Length: 231
Image 1 (spheres, rainbow, N blue to C red):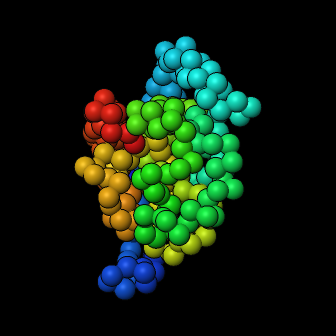
Image 2 (tube, rainbow, N blue to C red):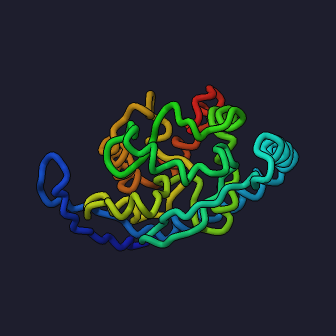
């Protein structure tokens, strides 16, 4: 059976880009790929949570000891496909009052564009640095994958305050379901990339996405985690 895949084009005004020209991003509607990817996400996420259950409980206990009175799981509102907001889960790696400290840290932002990132973030706890280095803090997002908020592979979901600063070109990141890992996360020295470079990798994934692309990214992510680079 031959499937005629629908192709749609999104006209995006890229005024903030160096070219300053209108850019068309072509996005394929892939029903078979989307169905099989969702099935793969569900099976892998359920199996991973079952296998890692005891280690995850141990991590939770250590976080409670490290940050008394704070929940080991941290939830935050993120923006998913087509601008839909959802609760995003992580293991707590920062002090409980991290959000209230953000305003004072914004002038030290080392990432250009809407995203915020500093290498020596004073809000991160000692144990938080360890689980971030090994990417253990990201594992609760398997719950988001099971719920359908996220996929294993896809652009990382941004914060609402970041999306508010997006131009039309940047908003195309929201055209697909966000993921736990993507092209940007497996790049050498990825933390040195600019926001525009990060964005271009996300656009590349949106245009390239398919079974082979997802498989390669998952393999490279596993290699990055084993190399203790973190994602």
